[in-house]
Length: 377
Ligand code: GLA
Image (cartoon, rainbow, N blue to C red):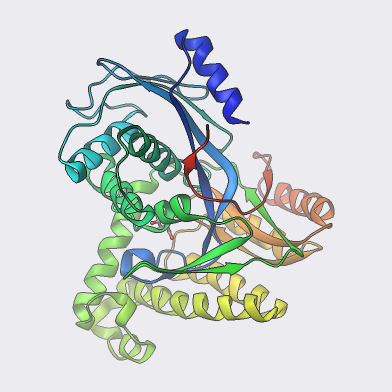
């Protein structure tokens, strides 16, 4: 998909040319899962699958159409947030309006995407960032990538009802081709770490949609807040393994396990970044596997399909490491695979997965890391 394709689709639909086209990538998280809601460490990369928006300003109302989601109900950027998929755009308009102190203009927009929806690759954050960059460009708003990411997170909190962290929006706004992003989600410090060219990122989609995941996500977040209150730490990012062990009785079993996941995952995230920098391949395998097991057993956000997929990856030829990625409860695993062996890897994973999950054909996306959201034409 190119900006010319998207501009062409806009023209076909609205009979005029768009004044701007933007794109924002999805992301996969390599490690550091369910840590950003505790101000912890994450290590995502933006990927070369994107949401594109071609648009022009109109005298209201806004009319959004999409190649995959159908036509949205018309809405006014100064009015109520709509109930359909356009609420991501409408929510961003609201957040940008309060940042800028003036309303965002209404749009005619065509939204196109080669980023799967519901696979845990952050299509919603990509949509937020693509519209964010769009209004930013139209009104020449002087807004940094970090600020845009914050507004996207705020949009989720206020208008979507997901109490998410900031990882997805940061990755989509600030990705860099060839690199993963080591982010401290407390202060948004960011270090770009090269992904060795010998590795390929393969997203192994279970094809199990992430149903009911938002309420379970919010519940996990609450449990981590409660755990940090019991431990008297600012967030779980500040809790040590000793504190968590010592507080086990007061925490109770569930909060204890949630806390243990966050603490151990933060540690794994640091160790993984070091291992990648040093080329310690064996460590990568071990740390990704431990991360999956901790998400499965302690944070309890996996599901039989994700477990079957992870097991399949661990045994497959060419696999450097694999784990579930994103919020969980369905979606995909991420695997790092030796470049040149992705075909044998896919065949082996597919066969193993189908033995355990007979009714869902897995889907594989071989991805490259990519640059973040930008004006595309
Ligand atoms: C979702 C959220 C992120 C993060 C992940 C889990 O993608 O949007 O902020 O919490 O889940 O790591």
